[in-house]
Image (cartoon, rainbow, N blue to C red; front, side):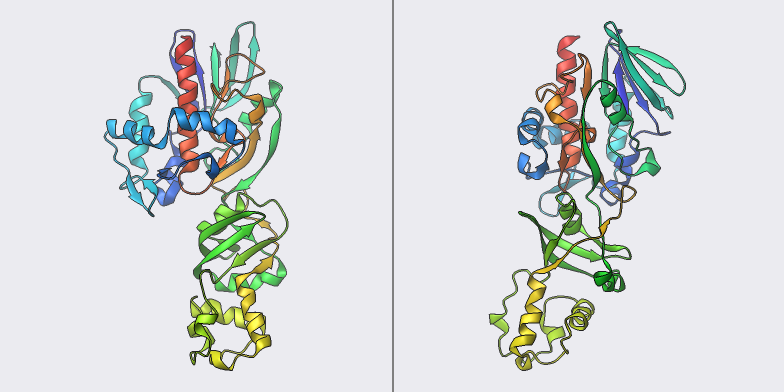
Amino acid sequence: MLASLLPKNTATIIESNAKIGAKILISGGGKCNITNDKMGTEYFLGDTGFVQPSLKMFSEASLLTWLERQRLFPVLRKETQYFCEHSAKELVDVFAKEVKKQKVLLGEKVTRVHKRDAHFTVTTDKRTLTAKYVVVASGGLSFPKIGASSIGYDIAESFGHSIVKTAPALVGFTVQKEQFFFKELSGASCDVKIRVNETVCEGALLFAHKGLSGPAVLDASLYWDKGKIEIDFLPDFSWKGVKGSQKQISSLLPMPKRITKAFLVQLEVKDKPFSKVTPEELEKLQLLNHYVFAPAGTFGYSKAEVTKGGVCAEEVDAKTMMSNKEEGLYFMGEVLDVTGRLGGYNFQWAFSSAYTVYKNIKGKI
């Protein structure tokens, strides 16, 4: 989506989809994780100094207050995450009401933006518009089936901006041949801790037909580019606490039996009373606390919730979101090289950076 502010001080919103809010409607299992009670720059991949001003100017509390004024009351789930109470359509309806104040062009694709003198020319597949200010809010490459494209990056590059390498993020991992047995566990899940370099992600891991998914995996994908990761399948489990237990290994370990038995086969340890486990077998079992392997890749942009990388933040003013290379050109949200963790952070960044743009342009007109 790309918005242009015309000389008449009205805004025109150009949306490639037939309706607004397509990505909102499918997010958070259809209930849209709007924001998070725990908010801070530490939850974002990117320049924290760039993220901070917008989060401070329009915080999660500011967002919730604004939504309540629109008669939308997000509910707190999973301890810290705010969702629409019934469906994401509640949030889309709020925006649908707001955009009635402006001109909205649906089912229209921007093909080019260029500038002559003090005005921009925005070319779409249907018309040409003139604008004093242009706001690029086109998102990333994730979910091409709902209109995601590279147009935001193309516009940025045409004005001399550099693009930080993009990649699918908040997405599942595909696996190497050695981990193909994961696919046989499709549908099973367990709580884990995943270490990617110096970052640890906690939560549920879901074995999927393509490899690994689930909240902990999606979070970990934000920090992974290539190489090995380490998974603790038995977080907070004490081996000393079960010493001498007569229970079968598959009943003793705090994982679904289906998962435990699959690992026993891979580790070449027979399922038997834990008291009969040899020191060598115990050493093998303890590998479950630091199971190391290299993902083959990810599920790709078609399954990724967001795109990491994007328009280089160093080339955009953190206090205004305006390009440092072209007066009147703004970038906001996912198109920038800022990506949040799972849990409402990317929506908050979209709202916060949008508010920063709004304040700056409002001050000018």
